[in-house]
Image (cartoon, rainbow, N blue to C red):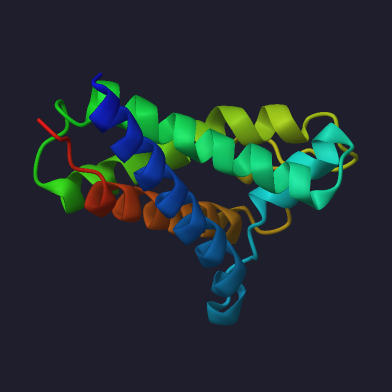
Length: 146
């Protein structure tokens, strides 16, 4: 990856993570559960919310670098379609692996695909909405320099 593409991916990852964060907050207004990955990360780290937010943005930037290096050239379509596909893939990874692992040590583990929550369908839709926001923003914000 060239330095220019690295920087473009970092900026696109920051933008996409911001969009995901805002999507997670406003989706409660349309009947979906509020999603706050930074809060969950802060709780798991035993740290203040700011550290959770920093970890969330770092994860978003790392995922953007992965997208730029391995997925951008392999996914079909233009930026929007690539972003939608990547958002769906990120949702599947999150609800099948990441969230169950992160929440396993809490008093209320979410389970795979949120099966241990009172409203698994709504939680899945909420996770999908956030990750689609991330994917769409990433797909539109990242274009390689070469």
